Image (cartoon, rainbow, N blue to C red):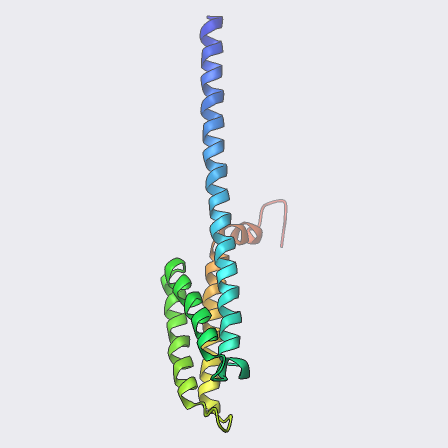
Length: 152
């Protein structure tokens, strides 16, 4: 009897430890992906700012800034959810139109096209925020729940 209880206790302990370990590894991986997304989103916006700046529009720097921006876009296409990718593609289309309107000799550009890039950038940022905070939705619902001991 004592031996069977010991074996049962040991088995339950090993099973519990295995379940907790796998749960913790899953949480760690989720946090790692979340961190990678934040970093990629940040890199994209830094790259986009360079693309629309005087530095990025200068023909001498065009190839370098375009290459790094393309890497950011391709990375987002690989790891971001579809809603974010669609928003980014709209920004990229508007960015191409803006760059076509830019005259490097005079430094003039179509202000409406730049405003369109800015508006679409804000929409893409909103989609990115939704993606990043979607994972914390359960926590926000819990915080807003009214328990019987906590009246609103």
